[in-house]
Image (cartoon, rainbow, N blue to C red; front, side, top):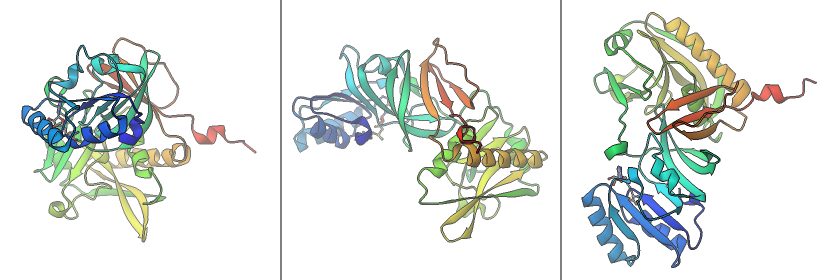
Length: 334
Ligand SMILES: C[S@@+](CC[C@H](N)C(=O)[O-])C[C@H]1O[C@@H](n2cnc3c(N)ncnc32)[C@H](O)[C@@H]1O
């Protein structure tokens, strides 16, 4: 995050979420002419951070106890706002207090997928110039926006919903696990050293304008019942009484093949749909530049497009994830 912030000597930096250590690193990077303000909602955290910074020789770092959803009122513009807590939205104060060439570094949650975005002003909206998979504790206070967690098998299989348009019936989905499993394999493979490949397919599947959630699975407890591709955030297509999720198998050491597992009366249809999405991603998007992520204040238009796009409606903004032209379109037909 510090590298993404591209900190320069003399920068004014607002850190959201305190601890002391990161604020001290920022203070080193911006030097004696820079300004560092660290805000935390929790008075115990700010007290500890203040004491630690004083002890370590950083009395000039300001520590403020407040809800950072309101920015740091009356403090003017910041070159960098570095958010060290997961947010589902960009409150207006962060945009208003970001200098014209400023960088807003924020772990933004989009349909259960958190990406650390580097956002910059771009006309009436913000555009991400980098997006890195990450995980953080959730925002508290006015910006708190908890996800919906549906327990499908005690606490050992939990479905997370993070969009107001997706509803799910916990009992019918849990009952799907009692039936047989439908399985399909795609022959599409990836290796662990292919940079960003799993991040890319996860965001692609999350970007589909259809009911979607992510599964979190305690593999030790559930045995063979469910085999997610990723035990923390496994992409899952949903129906009213059925679901299909991404899975992996290892045909050879270090090589993973994408597949899908479906449960419930509509498992065949959902598995076919998921397979199609994996094939499309592999053919058209996997080797492309990845999606544009833009954040539009509520009330400003999101430009229409014929590209695959997901709009995530939040309280203060609409987050748009827009995929580029399919790479097979741009290839010379010869
Ligand atoms: C991961 S910690 C921050 C780590 C810190 N930057 C460091 O250097 O160790 C996240 C912090 O965000 C704080 N937080 C959560 N919601 C907040 C809010 N609305 N405003 C300010 N701080 C908040 C929590 O109290 C918690 O201390």
